[in-house]
Image (cartoon, rainbow, N blue to C red; front, side, top):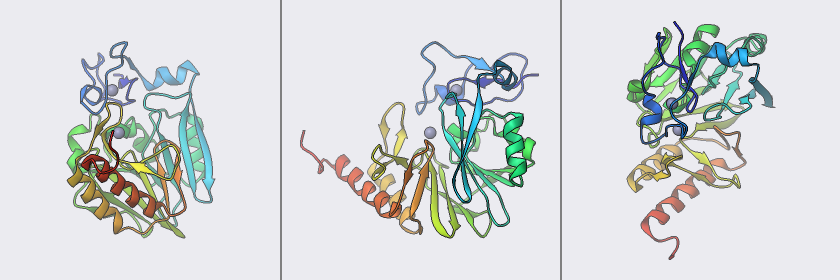
Length: 271
Ligand SMILES: [Zn+2]
Ligand SMILES: [Zn+2]
C-alpha cells in the first residue's frame, strides 16, 4: 500500500489503500490547508516526476545543509552534522532518492535523526529505515506522529544527550515538545528548527506559536524559553530556512526575547 504525503506540509502518513481524508498537521491552527484543497502524492511519484532533487551543501568542516529543490511543501532545510562517534541528521526533508542515500553512505551514514517539531516529521520513517537510524522525538509531541516507523525513540524531560557532542533541549513554545539541538564541535552551535526563528537581517530572532497564521507566544512562555536558552553556550545558530546567526548568536537571541516581551507589553512602540 502507498504511504501518502500531504503536498502542503510534506508529512507522510502510514500506508493506506486510499489517501487519508484529512491532513491533521495542516488542519491544525499552526498550519494551513492548501488553498486549492487537500492534495496528496507518494514518494515514488515525486521520484518518478524527475522534478526534485536534494541540494546538499557543505557549510563548514562538519556541517552540511540539505534542501529539496525546487521547493517542496514547507521547504525546510535539514542539517547533517558529522560527529566523532555519532553522525546526526537534524530535522529532515520529505524527498529521498538514491543520490541522497549515496551521499550519506559516503559520509559514514546517519546514526541518529533528531526532530525539532511535528512540521518536520515529514517522511522520517523512510529516512530511518534507509539509514537504520533511530529517530528522537520529544514525548510531548507523540500525538503528532502519523507514520510511526520502527525506530522512533520518544524522549522526555528538558534535555537528552545523544553523544558527547550533541544534546537536545526541549524549549516548547511552537509545540509542547519543540526542541533545539546543541552541538559542541569546537564551538557551540544551536540548530533551532522553527523553535527560534531567524529574522531577515540575521541579527534578530523571533518565536511564534504559528508562523503561517502569525499567532505569537505569550510572555511567560518567552521568559521560560529565554531562561532555558541562557543556560546554553553557543556562538552560532542555524534555523530551518538556511539562515545563520553568527557571531554572538546567544546574545542576539536573548536580546530578541527581551524585545519580543517589550512589544507584547506595549513598551516597544506607540502606534
Ligand atoms: Zn499537511
Ligand atoms: Zn513549524
